[in-house]
Length: 161
Image (spheres, rainbow, N blue to C red):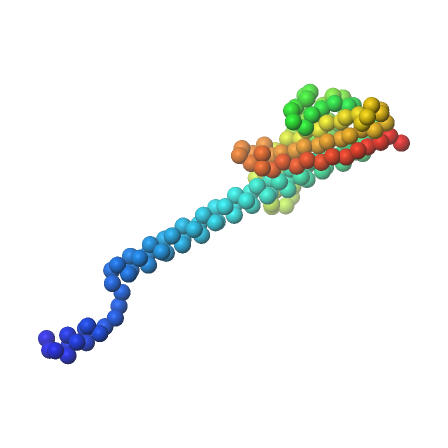
């Protein structure tokens, strides 16, 4: 080898093996952080879909209770525990049934996979006045690990005419 060839090789610049390994480690940590964000985003999206579905179901049940005849409303129930038999939502307003299960099968894609929503309600007499009721409705998804994070609560006061 001539002297000029050795000098030319010393001036060549490139990556050493250590530099390449450090770059790969940094890249792996970056990819791991982004993939973790994707998992969290997917989970948050699922919880949001279940929350929307439970809110919709609770709203629908509250509207059914508010639109029912005054004589069909029976005080009782609980929003924390099932009271009486579990009925069919919509038809379960009268006669001592204060909870129901409904299947969320909306035509839009965001509700797909939500499945069942459990709804409870309580009708309470306000200040011993039989002409005023305090109505509470609570709903939550039946999906495992999501139910507690998808609860919806509504309260209303209804007075007789």
